[in-house]
Image (cartoon, rainbow, N blue to C red; front, side, top):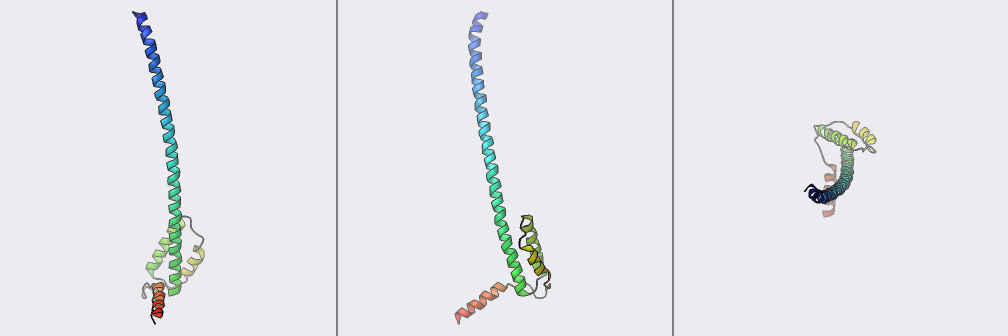
Length: 136
């Protein structure tokens, strides 16, 4: 009887070990694939974040240039415009931008603060004059 059990048990145990090894190898392959996909996803996300940051930096650079030019055309800044300027510059610097700031900051710092005049968009005035000139 014990010989019969050995005859039956050994092949069953061997078969079970084969199945277990197959499953383990399959699990290893799945884990490796998941790691590769995870690394690719991280790289894709990092690339997307960098692209977004660069895009935001371009927009902030435009805003800084626009704020600067408006202030120079007007010949003054308001307290609110100065706050907006400072917040925009801080965000731009946090993203690593700095190539235009030194000269612009010097220009802005020399302008008087005139809250009594209020903000004015010189570009709208220029466009209005151009449009009036076309209509005549």
